[in-house]
Image (cartoon, rainbow, N blue to C red; front, side, top):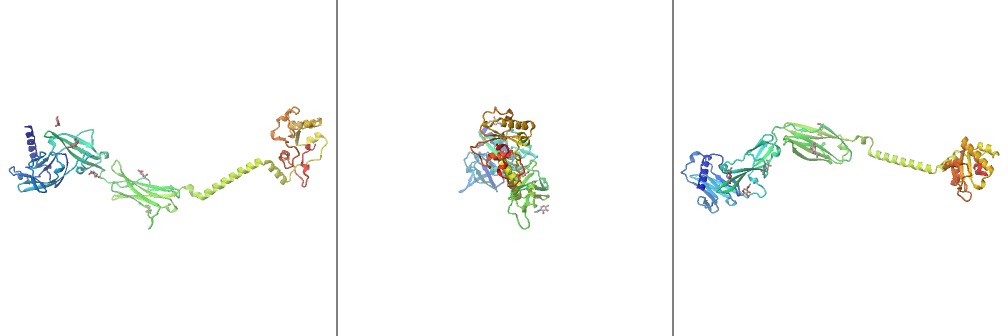
Length: 485
Ligand SMILES: *[C@@H]1O[C@H](CO)[C@@H](O)[C@H](O)[C@H]1NC(C)=O
Ligand SMILES: *[C@@H]1O[C@H](CO)[C@@H](O)[C@H](O)[C@H]1NC(C)=O
Ligand SMILES: *[C@@H]1O[C@H](CO)[C@@H](O)[C@H](O)[C@H]1NC(C)=O
Ligand SMILES: *[C@@H]1O[C@H](CO)[C@@H](O)[C@H](O)[C@H]1NC(C)=O
Ligand SMILES: *[C@@H]1O[C@H](CO)[C@@H](O)[C@H](O)[C@H]1NC(C)=O
């Protein structure tokens, strides 16, 4: 019968492989519930292989040993030196004994629950270190069940591997690190079982040590501002166990504003380590300047040191902060004052000029009245025209025209036009008067005569030429000639 043939085959195979390493010599054994499992007695020498000797298996319960030959569980098979579980369950935990003549052996079996969130049991992984760039090989072979295995699947970190080659073979890279689980599917008595074997593969750098080397120049000058914070980054290429540290101590004391950070390490693709440590200097003061903050990386093979020196930024050396601020304030104030003076000067231009004339002793000096209009005009430097309809006599008209002639043709006289009463109609005036610049036109708006200090007289005085004045002169004398009439 089919069912009888298979155990016989296994029996034969077991004898062939009896002296192999598949026997269980350890005292404490761990197994995972639900998987096929076996215990195999290790023969001390081939002479013991006497088929006549009776073999007994016991499970040591609290009330005494139980002979497993007499137990009726279909899961537990006794095959000479081997005790098989199809599969092993949590209740199988306990102490087992093998007895053959005077030889005995004991095992303590611990069956642990299957992991709910993982395809393997952490307690049962075999750790293996593989050097980077060396060959990484994962062979899914089972010494004991190999003949029964129907199919093998390889998982990496519980994800089925795309390329299901067996053995899995490649040049190791750091990304290959992880848990590799072989799942062997096997049939027994028409049922499908699986057995797992997990390798914890760690990729390690090559074992040749390098001399630690700090990155960057040996002396690093760092430009800083007083009162600010700075981070000095010291990094080195070194081996895993090498040390990197700061030397920030002065004689018998330590700066309270200098703080050394943790060392961070990252692995390079070459299998070496890039280690970095930060020195943080807060609120930089003059004590921190021109002092060598040294960083050292060291191992048995060598040492490397680098100095960081803080220097104050140059533009701040020449002008200390408070001087710079004061200078800026003075410059701004001077600018504002200058602008104000110019503005006042423009607004009070007339008053200022008159004030100047008064103090410099200059004034208009009027001659005694000249009879002849023409000679009068010739000697005049200004022609004041008072526009008034009621004052247009032929005499005035002559004065006006000859004055205009001097002004416009000879260009000896400057004209000042005073609108005594508002005049809409300028037809009676020569056309050329319309070309007069607006600032030379004064308007008389008042009903009665104005004081000498009024804006009208000041504006008129301003348009008049300046002349040296003799002291104690009567005010009325400074009035222009033509206004007298
Ligand atoms: C292996 O067998 C257990 C039960 O014995 C089952 O829970 C698990 O899913 C099986 N694993 C695979 C990969 O089929
Ligand atoms: C796997 O190996 C790494 C490195 O040797 C180790 O840190 C980790 O604890 C191991 N994991 C298990 C589950 O043993
Ligand atoms: C695995 O088992 C199936 C039947 O369950 C069978 O058809 C197949 O040939 C077996 N494969 C191997 C490699 O033994
Ligand atoms: C320090 O410098 C190293 C190398 O340049 C760099 O990898 C690291 O990120 C830096 N650390 C910090 C905190 O900036
Ligand atoms: C830092 O290194 C320099 C040069 O190697 C050395 O002169 C200086 O004394 C060191 N400073 C400290 C604080 O160790």
